Amino acid sequence: MELIWDGIREAFRLIFTGNGEVYQITFLSLMVSSLATGIALVIGLSIATFLAFKAPPGRTLALSFLNSGMALPPVVVGLVVAVLLWRTGPLGSLHLLYSPAAIVIAQAVIATPVVTALSAAALQSLHPKLRLQVLALGASRWQAAWLLFREARLALLAAVMAGFGAAISEVGATIMVGGNIKGSTRTLTSGTVLKVSQGDFEGAMALSFILLALIYAVTLVLTVAQQRRPSS
Amino acid sequence: MRLGRALLLWGAALALLPLLLTACGGGDRLLLGATTSLQDTGILDELVRGFEKESGRDVTYVVAGSDQVLELARRGEVDVLITHSPDAEQQLVAAGEVIDRRPVMENQFLVAGPPDDRSGVKGAQTAAQAFQRIANSRHAFVSRGDGSGTNKRELVIWQKAGIDPQGQPWYQESATGQGQNLLIASDKGAYTLVDSATFQVFRDRVQLIDYVVDQEAPNLYSVMRVNPDKHTGVHDEAARAFADFVTSPQGQQLIQQFGRDKYGESIFLPASVGVSAGSPTPNR
Image (cartoon, rainbow over all chains, first blue to last red; front, side, top):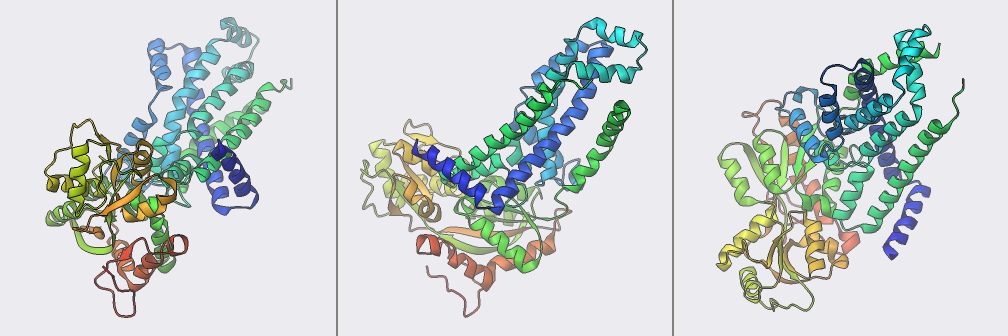
């Protein structure tokens, strides 16, 4: 119990005494996971829109893959991404392994099925006639999609939050492809793992609290955006 | 016009992705393979920082048990490596996969166990004798079980003791790094084999006492370069610079000094044979 209080105290000390390393890894965690979520959103919403409105043959099969993708084991993702990015691997010439970019890729792979599956569910839960009605009123396809996104805003932003949560809380793949390098690929989660392995439980606890605070801050922003009344 | 702008953003996002990824990529940097005890004690960051300051080069590293690091080296996935598994290292040198193996630093392996010393290992002449007492009393022993240098040494000691611990109910394999393994052994009140540096770092956090020093072989860390003739894309020049740095008087001084402010003594001893006069001599 005492350790938890010490951890909280240490977290405040690290934040307010301007510990450069802690700022750096917090910023890196935020950037990497935001970027991964952004990629997941771009890809996921595109696929979800296609699946929800075009209803291609095999949609149920595709959705079943996406739904099981929500449970994609990060350690498997880490292993596969690492092997692909190896020097001798097919993407080795890009020199991305053990860099923040590799973490972005791994986290995006983990977050994409989450965002896609939840977005598809969100769009499918709209009234099926709504799209037809919007189109009948003279909207172009793009305008219709935009209107439907706005209509499903609550559930879509929930999908974004779930995707971000999956990305930033991930650690197995992050260490595998990032390498946990000081000043380069050490994130709040991999930093916590390192502190534990070094037996520095207070430091680990402090990083954990900073991570929780960061997750809350980001989720708060998204929730405010979600709950705002539409402007029109 | 919000729609047009949104679409434009969408397209831009798609187009920018590969660019962004390449921008935050690591580039073509020296890649070092190192073992967990180096990271858990903190000396890895120290050595890397020292080399980066000295040479102006950037280093990327991957940390794993010796077995994994050696396997990555065999595949040409790292440029230079520091491990502490002499037998496996020599095999790789003999196979021509790695070259230029040089001793960097050393410490000792310790048999540590619970304060009440239920197996009575205190006073054992050798590590093997201590292991025999543990096996005879069937008291819990936690093994790294991960093909690390410490794990390799532990298996050799069991062999010397004439005991096969595999499958015994008192023999547990944690498959964790050096620090974590110590914490597990402490929590279970078990015996374990540990390197003296990690034990020093964890001394205050574990309920374990170091009873026996493994006198027969030091825990020796060596630096090696991946053979550039066998693997393309190896950064041989930078690898050589790194190997030169850690075995140089300056690098050896750094090793000698490491941990002194915190623990009052060196936790790794310099072991480079090529160190010239005026530098700390390896006091074995």
